[in-house]
Image (cartoon, rainbow, N blue to C red; front, side, top):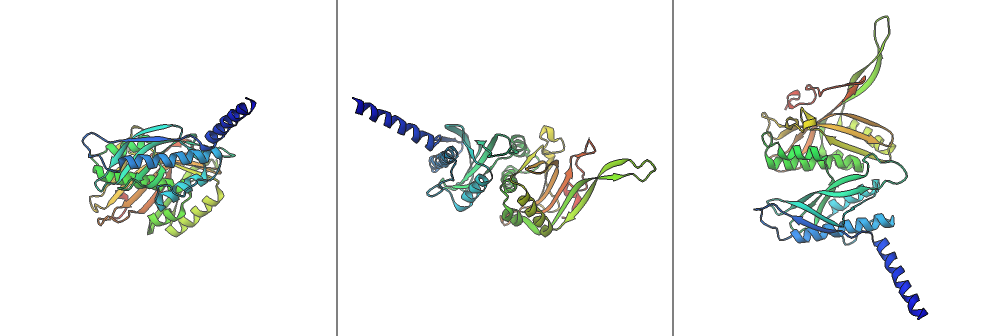
Amino acid sequence: MKMRLTRIMFILAACFWWGVNEGKAVEVTLTIDEGVDRPAALENAARNLGRVLTEINRAQQAKSILTTNGLPMDEFSLRSLLRLWAVTPFYCDDEEVVERCWVFEDGTMMVSHIPLIITPQEEDFGVGTYQEAIVEFDARGRLTDFRLALDAQLSESLEHCGSVVEKEKQMVIMQYIERFRTAYNQKDIDFINQIFSDDALIITGTVVTVRSNDDRGVMTQKVRYNKQSKEEYIRNLKKAFLRNKWIEVKFSEIGENGEEGGCAGITRSVVNPTMYGVRLRQEWKSSSYSDEGYLFLLWEFPEDGGSPIIHVRTWQPEWVGGVRQQPDDDISTLGAFDL
């Protein structure tokens, strides 16, 4: 009897140890819009995402590295996931994830709003505790991208501004803006270097304190703009990545009336239809520095379907001397640049 009781206690202890080290298993269900043909790989995509989220939970619970061998991910998505994990671990707090799946004409798929809880180690992390992920799949259901999602308000405004940019192009722009933002959080200097054109124009505003020329000598603040080449920008960005243990970049408030999600922040050139201007509000937070301002990106989406590139990046401080500034049209609209 004593031996039997000992055996039962051993089994219970083993089950408890197994559950703790396994982490929380995640079951994923993907839904599609009414009238959309159901892709054959939808269930496979759901299973594969569940496997990845379960492994994330296991590694986070065990405070170990991710076991990536055998995960249904291509090289790009795996590298993206590992870069995110290297900055700060996270986990999926939901045992059942039910999300809408976007299905594209070529059979590829995309899922938004995957709930993640950020779990920083040792020091505070800028993103807070809650973050959402975007996951893309190929036509067989294998993961092809894993990245952080945009601010929900920004994503919604991009999806519903049909009078400015057609729906399909909105989706493409949204994907690349998400990847662009995630690259800063991941400190992915190679991706950032690749997405800027070699002759990119980069203008950055800095708030400086100056003394007035009158007899009073009053100290005031103004914005001084600095123009950089791509080479200079990448070199300075590398230094910023080295200085900071973590970096979080957040985009929000697209449009002239950003607090209302206005659509005027994303426009297509009538002179060169391959050029798109995107105006965003940017929050930069890091372990050593933070700021808020207006970001403008001039994108080119080649007609042949090649990878888009950024020709212009400008940044303007939102606050100067305690006064909130408005975006300067001279550096934050398509009309400000020679297309």
